[in-house]
Every structure is written in structure tokens, then in C-alpha cells.
Length: 80
Image 1 (spheres, rainbow, N blue to C red):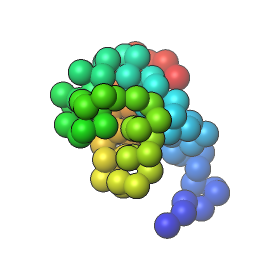
Image 2 (spheres, rainbow, N blue to C red):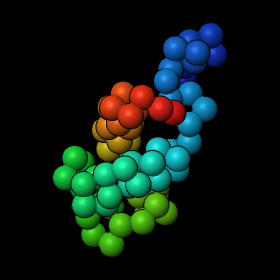
Image 3 (cartoon, one colour):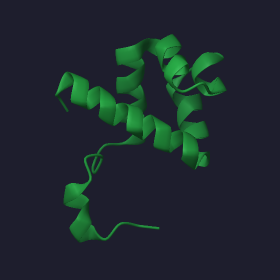
């Protein structure tokens, strides 16, 4: 389901790629910290950006958790 264009301005993730989200989270928490927050194999077993993106693009519930953690990180750091 897509979001109508007029609602995108209210979406804090609008214009941010999944690759940027995963990269920023990995840099902020480290792979071990990321795996503690979201216990999935792509973060704990030989983690990489590429393998994480592949998994998250196929797994909506995990992507939702990653996006939620990213928003929490942004609120802590107050940067974008």
C-alpha cells in the first residue's frame, strides 16, 4: 500500500534510503548492538550492509523494527 503524496511530508523517513538507515544504525550501535536491539541473523551472523538490505527488503516486520529503531536513534541524536 502506498502513501498518498500529500502525506509524505509528515513521514520522517521520506527520502531516506534503507541503505542509509542500516548504515547509520550500524555506525551508531555497531553490529553487536544492532543485533541486541533487533535479534535477526543478518545483524549477528557475518553482518554486512548488503546481506541486511536483502533480508530487510523481503521481511516487512523486520524492516518496520529497523525503521522504528532509526527514528529512536534520530530522536536521541537530534540530527538527520
